[in-house]
Length: 86
Image 1 (cartoon, rainbow, N blue to C red):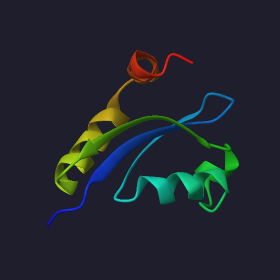
Image 2 (spheres, rainbow, N blue to C red):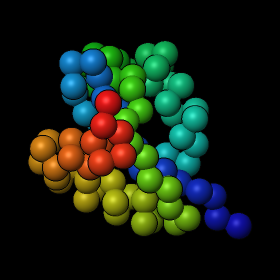
Image 3 (tube, rainbow, N blue to C red):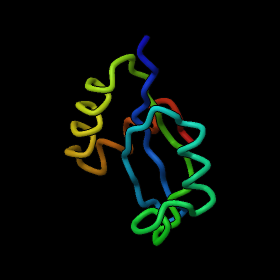
Image 4 (cartoon, rainbow, N blue to C red):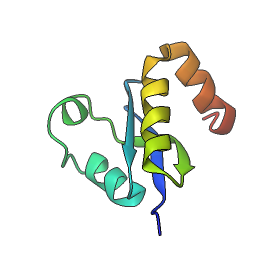
């Protein structure tokens, strides 16, 4: 049985965006919120989950993550605002 996988977008209050992929969204968001991920995420305080998508195959999730990472900031913001206007 395959596990669900998630592509997610996190944001900081300063509006920095981060796109990632995980098989455990709840745990990953907890890591972000509590600064348990060193480097870029901690430095920019990227703690707010603003978008996520569910996949049944990790390969599809990784492909979607790569696709979103190539998008412009404006396109990512439009995607976020479609489901999460605040």
